[in-house]
Image (cartoon, rainbow, N blue to C red; front, side, top):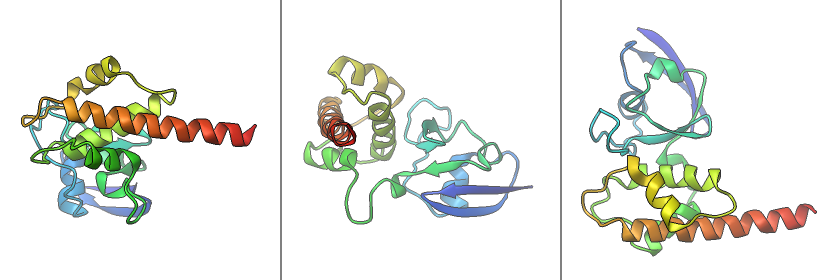
Length: 166
């Protein structure tokens, strides 16, 4: 057993976990953050994507003890209170979900993707970068549409902030 100490969604948290406990299971079972889904436990589906120190990580590929000391953002921490994050709002507006099982991982992967491409995204880039996230219900069309819309919104915001700073 090891002590695990994290900052999750802006709050310092901790607990004891077996050394073999995956981060996804620590988040769900120890912290009660069940928005991060367990899909395959083999890193194929992407349902478990969270942000670890600002980067998208499939939490079924990382041990909780490896993440100790890190800052984690889960789907529960993405919104600002009642205000949805722009990616969440775009998924809602563009019907980027069906059953919803893959949605948290898709949204977390999309947020990371947009953050890495602040100048904006094109459809080809979105489709290539989504290869690690599987949706069994949709044809990805509305997911891609939602990500492109969120990217456009967020890149406009980044450009507006840059103009204000100049």
